Image 1 (cartoon, helix red, strand yellow):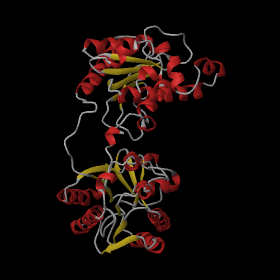
Image 2 (spheres, rainbow, N blue to C red; image 1 turned 90 degrees about the horizontal axis):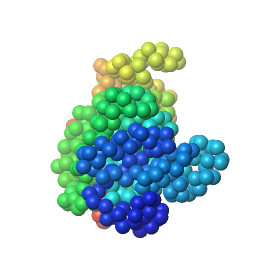
Image 3 (tube, rainbow, N blue to C red; image 1 turned 90 degrees about the vertical axis):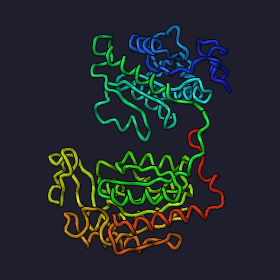
Image 4 (cartoon, rainbow, N blue to C red; image 1 turned 180 degrees about the vertical axis):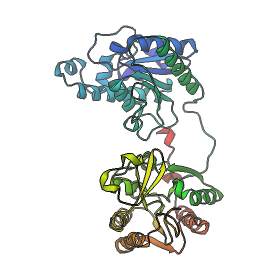
Length: 439
């Protein structure tokens, strides 16, 4: 189904949109309030030899001429009538509808291979709509937003995607020497990215992919594990367990991207339990179990919770064992009670696995700072973690305990070999790992 038939073509003739050459970049935004800036961005893209397809997700301004997908079409794609959105006066709901409509148009444009990238600009509201829409695009597809909020907490906008944010420096309110310079760079950036994308092109045959989680205090073990898995013929994708990394991992597992996962570093579970800054949410360690992907799990960095700068540590945590990791990050040792709860939660999540699962316990330390002689060495807390796992684990999950620490080379090689054996026993590997890019 073509975009033009689905939404009555916007203002562009159907045959022009369907057969446009060369492939374009989608320029989306509130053309009613940011029209001058968006048109300047379009001009710079055209100067760079890139065609544009414009999408207006503005709600309250007058109809804008010469827009490929006017606001009324965007609202319709989101399941609403633009006039109803205006009458309701509920700005939050209206923006949600426009985000959904923009996402649907982007997906169809990409499916028809009409665009090779997407770019937007705006303040808080515009960034919210554009980011939600762009999150529907797959990893590897160029997506860029010039935003006034790009220098703050950007996690809500980026989520687990590869969205690029560029700080606007000034408010996006008029053209001047600074905004022109920023928009020039944005146009050049998205044009460059789009020129490198071959939408729908066949890829060479690639090795099956497995996921691996890592952290600074488990990096030695993760490196050895990666090399071993590569020796088995796998493409290994390493996720930094910083909260966003765990979210990305869970999303890609659910999308069928991986043949297996070696979840060496599960530290994000501790942040979720205690209130650290690197939580991946309550659904961490659930995707592989739900979709049946083979998983080998360990306890990397469950000795710690990640907090912010030392000066900002909450009063109730200041008397606990802390390590000043850097100016922006403080590590806090988990207690025996916290570790017991973590062990119980992990066991419960693994017990419902629909595919093969194993957990490897390193009895001499779960991170490089939790071994004997290091500041987070705490055998009592570790034993609470191990005991809770032993007591809670069901018979369908393989339990392996070794009298070494988590960075021991033999330990991670054994775990990697276990994962490789699990995957080898699957009857149809091709049906387990889907082509994520073609979804």
